[in-house]
Length: 115
Picture 1: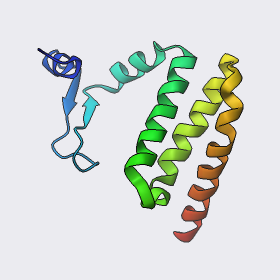
Picture 2: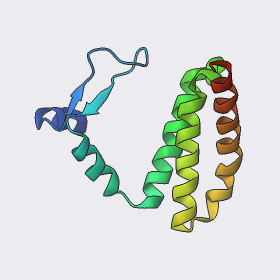
Picture 3: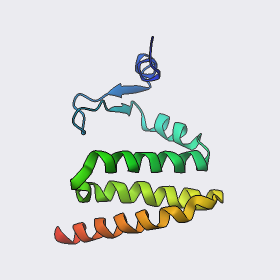
């Protein structure tokens, strides 16, 4: 049985990374940024928000004790999910304020260390 990812690779919409940025995980990227943008824009805001939250939670789980190393990525996903949730009128948007604030703060503190 061919998976959806295998089908997209065969159609040359996406390509597997030579080396994944996350050990033990497969990684793919779109072959063209416009394909990515069109695919993303085709999702309703609520679906985009849900996917950003799912990505953030997955990254948190993978990061474990080193979650501060992924603070900038987590801040992006949670704050984007919050914005999308609010603009779509979802009632659950307030649940995203705390993690968005937490990781935006942590990412900012880490950035100050490099200046």
